[in-house]
Image 1 (cartoon, rainbow, N blue to C red):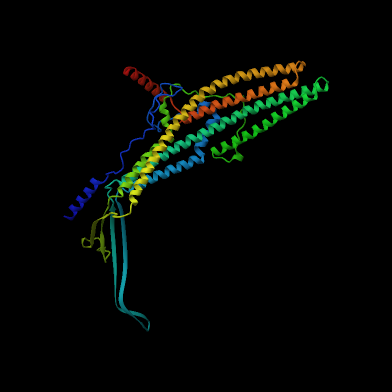
Image 2: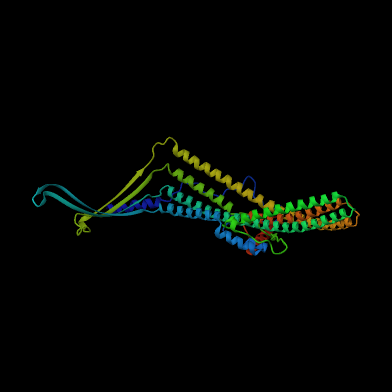
Length: 498
């Protein structure tokens, strides 16, 4: 009879367990306005749902630089920020396992032996000590017990859900950290190579200025040019040499930054100058690239899972208004003889249940529910802000990619023209047709144009990296194919509706 009642109680507990007091969760909308259906610079791109787990290509290979590929691999293996993010993710996974264990009973076992002596007297006699009248007993005990808290109102379930979603958020944070490290490393490396190009350009310029100084000195010594020509040539040469020293310092800083990113001490890390002339490559961003890639951003995924975790926490806080029920059971053997310990006569067992409810807490539970709701609202606001910022990032970088490409072409034309003008005016100076001030002006213009062209090429590469990061990483051919098919299907549907 007792056993059947116990089974009935356990069955009822299991039926009630799993009831959740958390609000039904729906992914928040992005904001007051509707999501954009197209980019300003690429009409027809489609809006989709988060898919931060989708595969990504090794986007950095688009720069066609084996050294960059090697550095990215070393950063993935040894960067300490990534190691920190990975450790946080493992910690969150362990916390999820710990929370999930609360759904099941806790089983414990124990065993003991005790020896007791009572009463009696002790006498000292010739030859030793005697005692009499005492009683002694030995007791042996073995037991196994268990306890379980049925999850009647979803407190434990929502705690597990909160832990699992937090784990997923930490995984997204790890992906976000990896993308950020890869992007920062790529930017530092590309900037270092652009600095190498500028150093090479300035080195050639310094040599040219030295020749100009020699020409001005020879003309002055021949009495056909004023001494101010020599002073101007010396000033221009020293200024270019100073710029060259500054670029050497800038290069060293980029090199040291790369060392930290790949987990190596800066003093022992070096990157050799580029062996050939700088040929900057800018990966092409496919025109058909769908806006679905925006929602592959791991920071959006992390923010969305933080909203879901906060929603589960509301259920945990609301469950505090309801009683807590605990079921316990214990069984074992107890006997004063080891040989008879496991006999039927030595059996003992017990079952029990307890219920606890807070009757008065002066609003503490209500305050905790209000806190959890406010935390949910904050998480929603953060999710919306992260998503809106993501769309801004992509739009800005799409515009930058187009504008910078046009600027680079214009600056290349300007640089070629400035170099030709410098050469022509230098020859005119040799022939005594112009003053040295014209030479200085032409050389300064040519140098400025060359440096601007190098910077424009770097800006295009930087914008490419920023666009890839804004899109949540690289892409593979299937992404583009699926995106193009989705765009065509949407166009057909829109035409049919019209």
